[in-house]
Length: 137
Image (cartoon, rainbow, N blue to C red; front, side):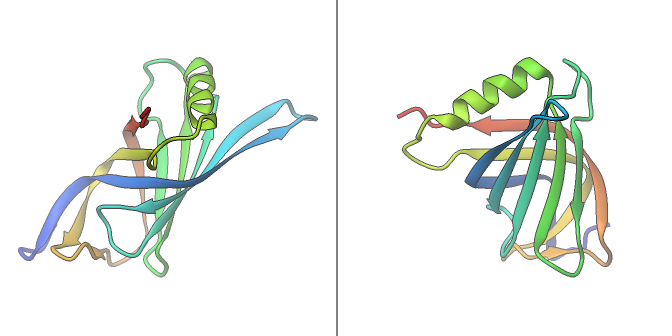
C-alpha cells in the first residue's frame, strides 16, 4: 500500500535510448532488445526484450522484473508476429526525438514526489498494456 507522501502509479514511462534486433539463424528466432531510460521514475533504466511469440488480443503481454537492489528493470514482452514486424520497421527509421514507451503493470508502484521508487523487495509483475509514441516529424 502506498505511503501518504508517495504517489501510487501503475504505468512506467520510458524513453528509448537504443534498439537492436537479434537474429538466431539456427533456431529461426528473432527478438528486439531495447535499452530505455525511465521518465516517471528517477535514476533508472529498463532493458526490454520483445519476441514475436504472442497472440493477437492476448493479455498480459509479458512481465517486468523490478529489483530492489539496483535501478535496472528487465521486461519480457510478447507481441503477435505482425505487430512485432510493424514495430521493428518503425524503429528502423530515424526519429526527430526519442521514441517513448508506456507500460501498464498489474501492481501499483509507490513513487515519491521526486520520482524515487519505493519497494521493500524485488517485484515481478505482469504487463497488461503497452503504448508507443513514435515521432514522425
